[in-house]
Length: 474
Ligand SMILES: [Zn+2]
Image (cartoon, rainbow, N blue to C red; front, top):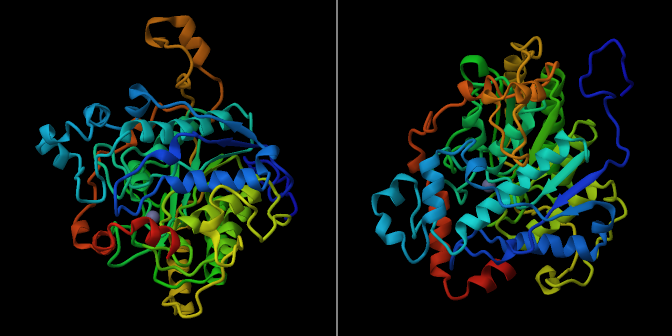
């Protein structure tokens, strides 16, 4: 695309694909956390992806950071303080004493969100890495930040949901909003990005765009008619899809919709949640995309040249999650065309048998339930909604709060501090954002009716005792 100087591109030069500086966040302890026998969420997959990143030599081309653990004050920027306290106190030894509060915060030993050893440390690390990613982008230390432990898009302000307890994405976006007027959130997980959408449903500071399976599927939200409310009306975009969608259909639709959103909204930063449960052969998802199709969405988003955070998310056939995320790390680095389709020897080599290829083939037996006519119809509706947004909203002059990691300041007591954090620039600040954030449970009617996850859990329960064999080896 040729750069048109008459268009006010806040993101500078339009389409480009030269190598961008990448920061990568990885906590070496992350793979040791364990949700419990039979549970499909396996943090080990992050360590597997990392192992491939090492064995492919990709680490040499990016800055590798160990993230900090987000503390209570940071987590409470979005989460209810009482909920954060609860998460920090509860252990496998004492949870029985919490009785009703377990229920209230949606934790349960037999359901999606169990109490497990190191739960709080695990979530603090995931959130710390996403906040660190945002700070690196804010300070222009990188063009792209990658955190495969992040992307926990179902967590609500005071409630765990769908294997997520702390919403690292909302926290990262809040950090970006200190410096950026408009942030776009894109979600290619097979599940609706409900926690992030809900947090910013009333705000025009964040446009959320989620592509997901819709209809009798967790979490039950994300219809095309759900567009945001109040000041946030038309700033939530939902692309409801059905089983079996192919690379070609998905990637075409993705490019068309995201291009239109970017043209209308002109985001200054993008957060891309790359849940790998939208890839063929996932234990919970039923899309038929390959690693190449999933990665093409990342590549195309990168080519917009807008500061970008790339996060993980779902993904329950863990060898394929590792495949997808190492490939997408290579995409971020512009090295995806050089990457060998033979998986190099690594700590988890035997998981990648029998073919030991990086890339996956689509499942020829999976029918695509999305017709061309249906996809066209969805696209037309979304474009109609976006047409309501003629101009990107401007953000009024506002004070930029301190980064999470700067020493504590009390600006309201210190005029010099106020000056220091007041910027004569309309690009960011959080002055208005908290007014627009809403308590959760905005639209949660009937979500309990959707039991696909429960069925998966039951299936795995039956297989208990052979869990590793089944989950890892099929
Ligand atoms: Zn998911």
